[in-house]
Amino acid sequence: MITALAGGVGAARFLTGLVKLAKEEDISVIVNTGDDIEMFGLHVSPDIDIVTYTLAGIVNEEKGWGIKGDTFCCLEMLKKLGLETWFNLGDKDLATNILRTNLLKEGLTLSKVTSKICLLLGVKVNIIPMTDDRFETRITLEEGSVHFEEYFVKKACRGRILGVEFVGATTAKPSPKVIDSILEAEKVVVCPSNPIVSVGTILSVKGIRESLRRTNAKIIGISPIVAGAPIKGPADKLLASLGLEVSAYSVAKLYADFLDVFIIDQKDAALADRIRQLGVNVKIANTIMDSAADKIALAKAVLES
Image 1: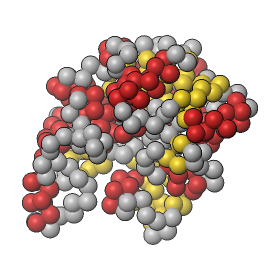
Image 2: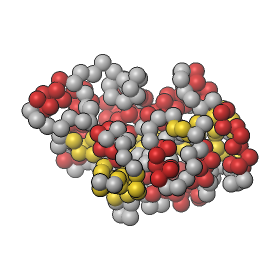
Image 3: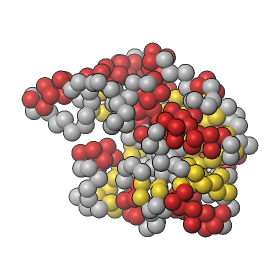
Image 4: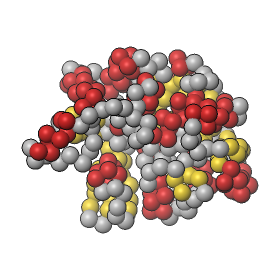
């Protein structure tokens, strides 16, 4: 069994390669829910939906999120009616979030709702929210604290970051199956996701980091930083805000207490010895997934580690 820790786009792209080499039923994916947000009265789970849509083969591949061929008629009407529409939800995407919200109101947990949506969309991978409890990632800027999605989408990552807050980290419990999926795995993969607000949120949930230290599984991480820059997203700004250099080395250091192998891009080969000094083995590969073949090759490198 393989268990992956995942954020959104980068993780989803890697997973499309992994499912070509391993049975979907043998893969569990623990997904960040710190980005979850209420929009238009709906419970939106951005990272869960990106992973689900990607594995269902319906994602908008150009954007990396949303559903291919979607329309935005509802959003256009909401804007005409005077509502803020900075968070782009297509009409088909809205349907998913309407179903999720209704099921949550009926008393189902986020885990059960996610499983139901996966079943309806034909996804056989076991997608597990990191927690069923309230959890919210907030970014502290000079003008105050904002939800991560507001910083990421509405503000387009503008503004100097003063801090990151995980609301709910002290009370949230791992959702059912999270700990067992780590302890029973043969391999655990830390996907190439933001180390602070994707993987970092998962690690902040009580018991998850400890289970990674305890498991007998081989734990392989993939760097989301290549040649001093993130492949996607604001990982550079977040690392810098914590006083860390923007490099694959910094990411490896954040995971060093549980990591066995860290895969870095060929452009970062010069960092290999520094990372090995952390007690982590290093593998060098092409981590930039420009094509389907790249995704499969990276997944193969993980499975062979």
